[in-house]
Image 1 (cartoon, rainbow, N blue to C red):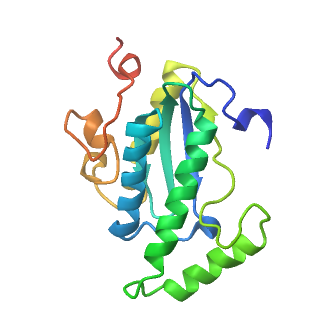
Image 2 (cartoon, rainbow, N blue to C red):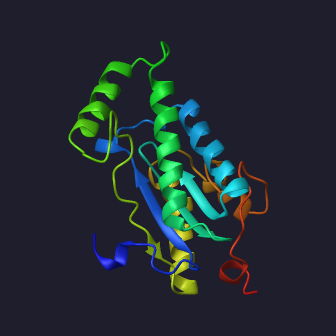
Image 3 (cartoon, helix red, strand yellow):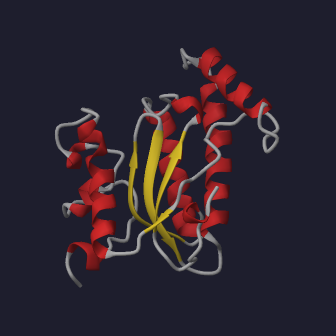
Length: 188
């Protein structure tokens, strides 16, 4: 992957997209969304992740992140994806998942064709991090992220979508502790 899609400035903020293999609509069930939420919460509390904005869509997530401490964003994202992959595959492999055989077959096929994996591949390999280099670009990315569920017709208002930080940006409390980029939205 080219220079533009790496965590080059370890003190910078990034817009990151993580998509499921074959764009499988896994996050249509709250059990899988909750694994992502719990893992992001853990990374915030224990790995130095600073979460500025987020949304979980049916087959991908968008996050705006930075970090504190000595851990690199690459390492945090690697650990996040590894943990969520294992937990989601485990949850899919339960009797309640009607799409279990199909999804496990897809993730196993992807894993077998990728030498970086032993069994299953849940996330696409690339994070596609884009460094947020200006206030206007940052605001555009956060607005895009929050409006994604509205454009997909999942909700009629971004603040109504549970798996997003849009609520936080409207003054309410959402599911995850976020650090609002005040200078972007409030000129501070």
